[in-house]
Length: 477
Image (cartoon, rainbow, N blue to C red; front, side, top):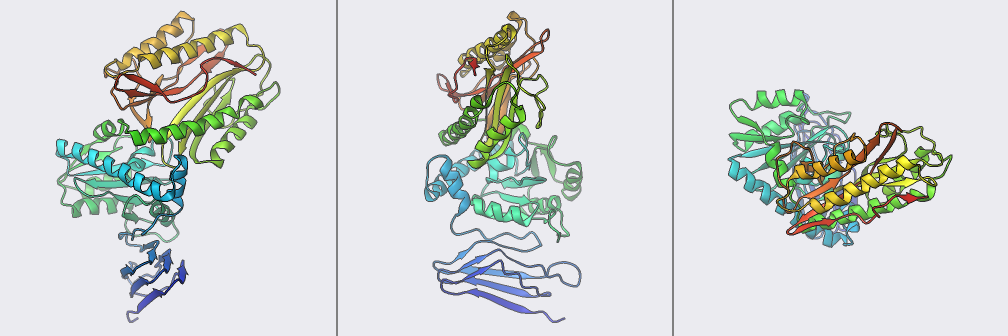
């Protein structure tokens, strides 16, 4: 079949919405003129060898707007000239218009790229491959770099010592959503989650990008815990002769330090967590199903800017579960824990304790120990203080009350989880700019009474600043 050429034009203020013409081994020129827009134009035609032979030439004139354009060969996607929904959502969290948010967010990410690239220079790393998965605890690496992480599967960002990163995602929908976010210019998809898949896997595309940049020393972020073993094998095969090393620590040391812009977003995230947390007390009563309270608290987050959430409302010691069969009774000690990541990627944890009616004696002991530990550790957090000192406070207060420790004390937060982790074996010191989520949990083995509370502390030049606003005392409902 002869090659076919087709030009799609959008004149004046007209609009072409999701046009999908099929062609064979052809070429397409796309133009937007005047105030026209071209949305979601894609190609699904295949050449005789099963690969797309289509080439694209894209341009728009004054006032035009090319919203998204892609092909199946993982080529660069044209960046939108203006922002739309995503900028409005991110701005809403911190009281900005979409235009203000666009300027502030771009400056925030540019500052991040500059700090990461400075660390790469110091470590003589030519390129970083940054990996994420779309779950709390693993979404933050790519989101921190590119402002977007897909809900499912692995995504990658590639950053060299200069310029902006390239984002690799598994579907066309992810590609369009990342474009709407408006942070990075180049977004590639392997279509691994779509019906029509590329012959090139995402890991192969990442490797091709590295080779095209002539990198000889490449760091991988998330190598041990996030990168699938199949992708690791592809990277090793495709990048033979290139030195590959685990750069997770280097990246984490940059990511753990927060700027004033970060803290503005963190405060907005805590305000959202507080609204959800405040919904719980009025629902706690004898005979109430814990799962019903969880549903109401989660609905507060979903109606606002909460994108990922873990909500726990329980009096049972085995509370780390999405569904609970607990029915509250008089005298129960109830833990309410709200963990949420906002649309801007910032993750926070807020938790406290409530008694359904007058508390039993052991419930009071557990609650007092939790809040005493939280207050004492918050006071201890300051630049130069040993991280292990916080765990020592946790253990001492629990031991004096005859209680056991059943969960790790805390960790850094920001865009997902960060350094440090509050272990007794940590030999580090708190540093200015860190944001520490502290959640002391105690267990009374004799009575099976369990409780936990949570807050976060921003390490300032002369101490720490508390992020939460809830009271540090047992509340009777």
